[in-house]
Length: 421
Ligand SMILES: Nc1ncnc2c1ncn2[C@@H]1O[C@H](COP(=O)(O)OP(=O)(O)O)[C@@H](O)[C@H]1O
Ligand SMILES: [Mg+2]
Image 1 (tube, helix red, strand yellow):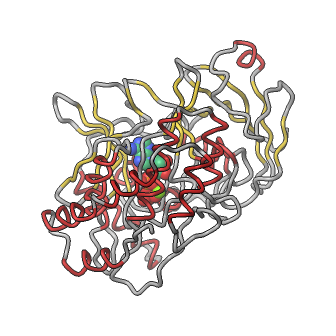
Image 2 (cartoon, helix red, strand yellow):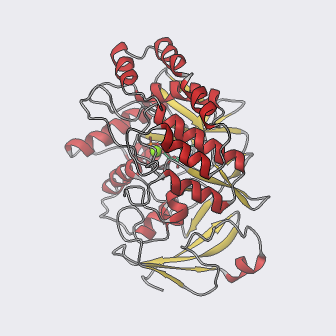
């Protein structure tokens, strides 16, 4: 195997295989644990999307070099810190006076604390559970983000940093966010990295902290979530904290268990930063390949329409995920997330192109473009779906008003919504 360090990977308590990677993040190798393949348990947990093969031979990977997958199979790259997580990671390493660390060392920090259900060992143990104080967390995060912007040499208190590291480095995406668990009875709040029992609510919280031109992004995401739910698109429960932070329950922590989740990018190796494979058609094809229930393919169509109508252009391949039903040994479309007006409309911007193309187009999506997809994937009554989703428009602005979204922001968003004709 390439490299000199090996990570064992577990899923639902079973060792599924071993991963090795070169320090330069160019190549890696993976070998399934023969006992796992032989056991016939969770046979569809790693669908055959052309990456991992069901063989006991060592499999070599050289096609995943680059920022998105860092040389390792995308199913495991999904567990690595993303944009925001990497900023926290860097602050943490600076605090430890450590230089850049390898991708496998990063997975050692993820250990059994990552999103989804994959676990990596040997892992780095971090300090014991402590109570979390949201105001304090935000203060420290502000310092960390300042460090990023101005590279001021501030020394952060190490306990504060360890907390931030534990709760801020795992979840993907670019926005500042933390993971916490709140005891259902006592209300006690602890870091969300280890506990997964159903005695707790497990939240992912997107924090409203770092805008230069003030845009209440998380508040807007919350208003969006209120109308999304009315369209039959499934989302986890969401609430506002202090009228501005967006908290949503985690779908990878449900029924007192970890749920195995992969993003569309992690499932396939399609790079979410590149236009090449970024299309709704690919996402629909993937749904067919994974044999997800037809009702959920129709739901994906609704999500696509929603994103077009409500101007969510940031609908890339890591903003769509699949969740594994381990009893039935099959995949489903995960609840929707990160659906909002993603760009600050107060900054001058030309109308952005959407991340996922529809019928080869990234803007000016017309009825015929979406009908082509509906026909191909036998979505019933597409016009009715479009009408229904468009009819929620007024309600969005009622929510904006009710929650105190500034008039100018509301007006600008209104100007940037679309009609599908
Ligand atoms: N409710 C949720 N349950 C579990 N995982 C989630 C949930 N919401 C988001 N995620 C995961 O966390 C990542 C970051 O969340 P997202 O809302 O996309 O943040 P950002 O706006 O920074 O991209 C997502 O890519 C997804 O993998
Ligand atoms: Mg996202």
